[in-house]
Length: 205
Ligand SMILES: [Zn+2]
Image (cartoon, rainbow, N blue to C red):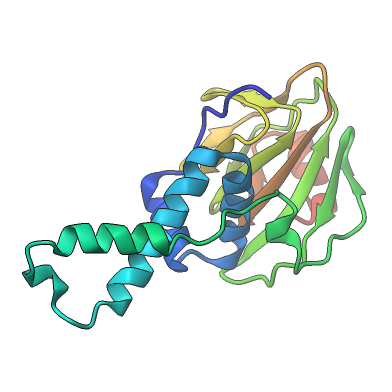
């Protein structure tokens, strides 16, 4: 596997670890963490820091050795790493793969829809160009297999793509392998071309 080059931001990892990120986006971040030892380590440390701070009812910060003590506590309280990409999906039902576009299939993941965020997997054939589109909200993606590319680079297995409503993009699936991704999408996708707009009701995204 090529090295992972696209990661969630520190803010995203901290929000994920503290449980303040919504469930839909958390699933995609957790899948990335399962494939990325660096982010897995960071989220575990953020979680441990949160736990230690909550447990510190005494003013330990007043004592000279407080920092060492807290760091020691953090290291002994590290939660278990997320071992596999399947682990974050364990508690959800995966739907059947269904056709959404020539060369593109989708399967639903039964994450409860909160704040209009839906989670699903996409599977697209090599060479497919997804139509030029804009978002009305977030579109967070983690690649499981294969790769796609757009104006910000190439995204292979484990890579994490955080797009928001300001972004217009046109991803192309790289040659050589079918691309499978997990996606958390908020709101709707708006296609910029007539053909995309025509087919939009079929996608029900
Ligand atoms: Zn990472």
